[in-house]
Length: 87
Image 1 (tube, rainbow, N blue to C red):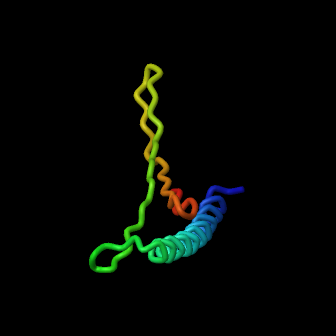
Image 2 (cartoon, one colour; image 1 turned 90 degrees about the vertical axis):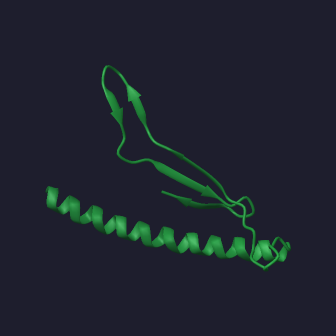
Image 3 (cartoon, rainbow, N blue to C red; image 1 turned 30 degrees about the vertical axis):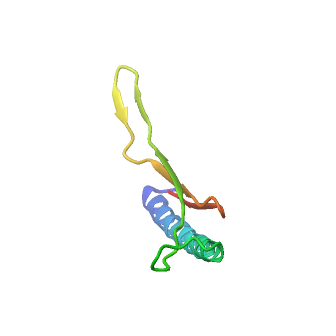
């Protein structure tokens, strides 16, 4: 596979994954929103108080050379539902 074909394929794949992930995150967010309101967990203005757990990571190692990754990963979990975001 040529480098140009690889880049084109990678771009298309990234676009598809991003679209699907965004759709799923919106679905999970709406479900969290509904469950919190049903449980009565709202503030004095009626806004839902949604609890989320988040964590992130990136690689860094030192074997005679200083190496830090240019990217990492983040994960957001809604304890009432499921994983809301990984990226």
